Length: 138
Image (cartoon, rainbow, N blue to C red; front, top):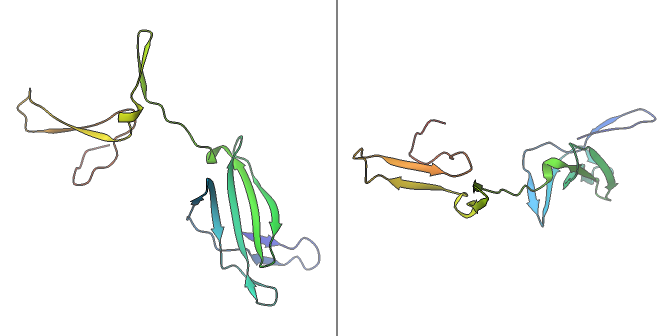
C-alpha cells in the first residue's frame, strides 16, 4: 500500500509490504500488510489491514480509519469474497437427486468385469484433483 500526501510536499510512504497471506478469521477474509515505513518519530511502522466482505461486482477499497499505531484499515466489498454454495445434482425426468454428499471427494472403483488390472478414480461434479503417486492427465 502506498500513502501519498495530497497537500504540502506531497511525500510518499510505504503502508506495508504486500503478501499473499489471505487470512480467514471469525467469518472475515483479510490481508495484513506490515512493516511499512516508520511513523510517529520511529515509534511504529505503518501497516495496512484490508477486510473483504461480500458485495456486488468487483468493488473497491474504502478507507475506514487510522489507528494510533499507524495501522490503516480498509473495507472492500466484492463478489469475490462471497461464499458460493456448491450443489451437485442430477435430474431424471421430474426427479432431482442430490449427490452433494458424495461429490466432495474422489472415489476409487475396481473392475470385476474387465480383467485389465486397472484402478479407476472418479470425481462427481468437480474436476478430479491431483492424486498422490497417480499421474493422470488433466
